[in-house]
Length: 463
Image (cartoon, rainbow, N blue to C red; front, side, top):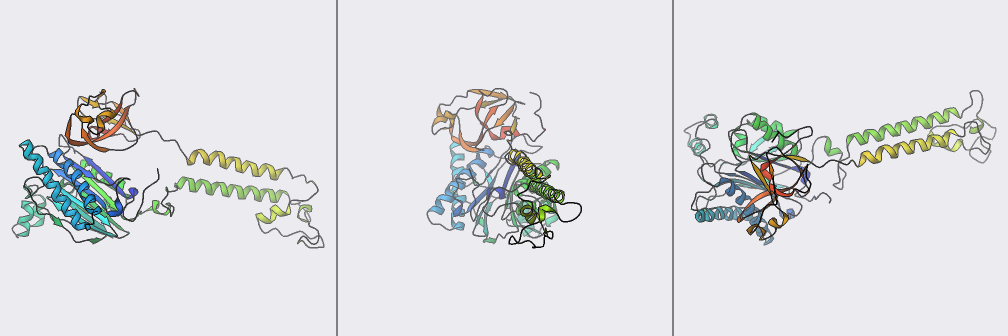
């Protein structure tokens, strides 16, 4: 499957990471980014939602916001609504969905949200609550949102300073969130230029509370979008973030060394090691051909191999032919009479070709092992079969198997998918397909936030 690219979206330019953080028992953040099936020609949508921790079902509220908002936005765009109008309508519909679900549950549910759309070289942002959007443009990190918080209202009224607000004990008390009432005041920014050197950051308060703006900029400016998102979350964890942490980073164009290695048609980047290897082989070939030419020359006097008859472009008096380069040498050393060194040429050329083929072919298409992950949820993690993930399957779903903390699983192709929770079709959750590393028969769907992908060399803690 090829890489999808169009004027608004390239998956290589997007990174999204969420983590429960070092102090929270569960993750109530959620994010949404396009995939290959998303009609991003209508605008590339990105969403970060943060379930309100002081209210019940915060995680469900955040996931509902991302699912409803993305669905309504693209339906509105397909019906001809402008990007700002579709974005505002989508946020209002997400708010109403959470509000109505909270009434059914007879509970309070809420989530903050920040959503951005990249379209035709511009970015438009909508937000409710204290999730933020930043624009990195040149050497600046510029906020695109204003927090819906009690502390921000005090700053606006001139009662406290921005410096005091950053560490105020009430800085995370939001004045509005999705799901707390039937309608919300959606803050919508005017479209901002999103140029070739621009990057966009959407994040929850767990990130920007832990890291100062200068560090946010540094971690984004010199990295690819996927690497930047990962580095931001890891830095917030190292800083002992007090909340869940989510970062979505979007770039307009490839930057750094990778940019020069991308073919114009959007193909895969050419690895630097492959470029160096080809250079070494070419130099070696030139050296061998040069050595062949030197060996065909006689030490004293004109070389027989370099002598041509009149009419072939050589001097008629038998003077040695001038050999300015490898191409001339190849033509000059083809006399009809056998030469003592005639076996050198065919030996040299096939050796170079065979070495190039044998070295490059396996290296150019390496077989990489599938990524591994570790089960991190306490107790058992049920593995649901495909039938449980089909429409209506969640009503009668029964898990086939279960994994336990510390088990290693293979991450199968397809990535995370938002699917109904087995046994509860009214709610959805991010699932990923896995297979037990030790027992291939144990394979199916598990909750994404209950496994952790392993980096090369890492190992799971013992069960």
